[in-house]
Image 1 (tube, rainbow, N blue to C red):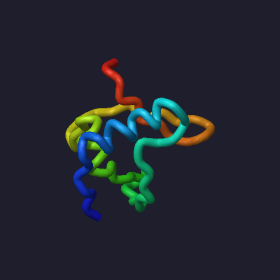
Image 2: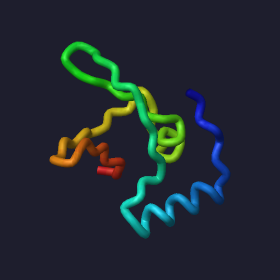
Image 3: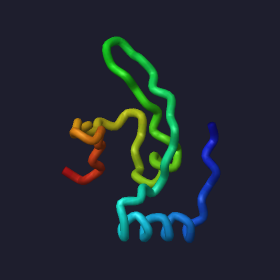
Length: 75
């Protein structure tokens, strides 16, 4: 699935709306893939571009009662 390029005004509006509420910036239905004993999900292109993540990056994944979280801070 290709992700259409979003204009800066759309990204700015989504970031403001997300900051004002619990609404996500983007919402995708993604297929989970099994690899060994783990399950993987593809990070959408919009998220990769917005947060500057790459396939070779190492990222912490946190498990919470309500779901998974990938913090994208500078720690």
